[in-house]
View 1: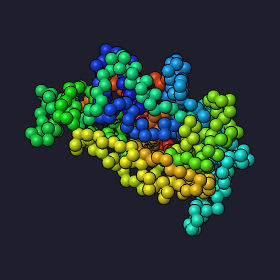
View 2: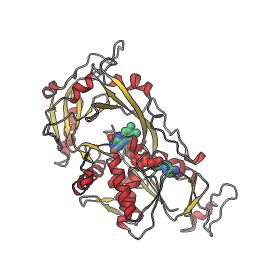
View 3: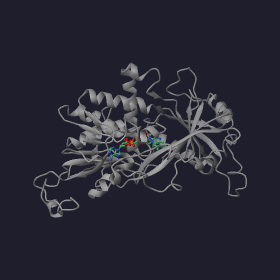
View 4: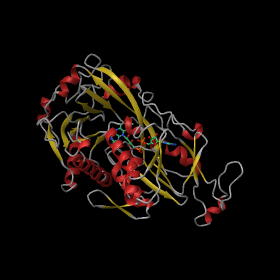
Length: 453
Ligand SMILES: Cc1cc2nc3c(=O)[nH]c(=O)nc-3n(C[C@H](O)[C@H](O)[C@H](O)COP(=O)(O)OP(=O)(O)OC[C@H]3O[C@@H](n4cnc5c(N)ncnc54)[C@H](O)[C@@H]3O)c2cc1C
């Protein structure tokens, strides 16, 4: 059983059935369709510019796989493409330029990213590279001046709906069953004959931990009181994973935080969307480069939505919103996840715009209309890399996307399938092998990620 039909659960189902076609696999999802958790709320951007080599390998191989899917399936090319690599443009203060350029040098040619000179940014409509203040009345020193940029070419956007639909339909065609609108309230040891359980809590007598193979999850209990027998549960429940794992004493080391996105329109947005930047993206269907995904020195990000003449603004927030989810499936057996409820409209003017207007002064209330606000969760791991664990009781946990799980989902799906199969390594798309223990908690071997957007 896989809990969660988000990016990672879907890729896991797809690769599990590919690797072990004889298995009987059920994906249980609380929402009505695939990809309606944080995946559906995400900006769905992809990039391979990460400071950690592990993140880079996971993202790079997933992006390459998405490209392969698009090449192979007409339906993933039109009317809109599954993958559109129009690029990321980091606008960086002088201080950080060297750091980013060193990253590219150290990658020994595996990172396709090019420097952009400050003079090349002069054509960017409305950009003030050297702001004089944060905002009127704030006496703090102004945010750092932009000294130049870095353009990531193997970066752009993926369609989360198309990706979710592809994984779901293909897995289903190969025999995976999906149960939507079904919420797992708890995982249970009940129903295994040999196991001894406490009368009220239904948790096992703890001495049985010492008996090899005795303590294994036997069923998943749903919010409507029904249950299903299983001998292995893969928990790919994103931000909500802890609600079903913590009651079993299983730690994930991950913490969910709400993050919002804001869709804006208006005069300044139109102007910026018309910019022809001096870069060479991988994809330029009109023959001309388009506005890339912009990252400002303050951490604010701007995603172009070309067909709708909108820009989505975001900024990772570690202060204003506490750790945790509003929803708790373990309490009431439902997952009432509403993206609009997590779109903190008030925070747009107070927490997000001030990180944009110093560099784009026209992005104030006169040049901009807030059209929509929504949110989902980043499931942070301590270092910003995914976590993959396996418990002797038959539970595999995968999560800790740290805000970049869609772009790594394919690789993680392969890792999960290999982990289920008892392998020590997984083969990523492209043939590179990846040791599974690197993402475990007990033998974790990863360096901290420095670029979380
Ligand atoms: C504002 C925002 C912007 C983002 N931008 C990007 C980006 O640009 N690029 C990127 O790669 N990532 C981005 N992310 C992160 C991305 O959304 C996650 O990395 C990705 O969704 C993780 O996939 P997942 O499958 O682990 O989780 P989810 O997509 O959340 O899927 C988990 C699923 O499990 C289901 N579930 C949970 N508990 C239960 C239960 N008890 N019973 C049944 N079902 C259950 C949920 O309904 C959900 O569908 C962003 C996230 C947010 C919030």
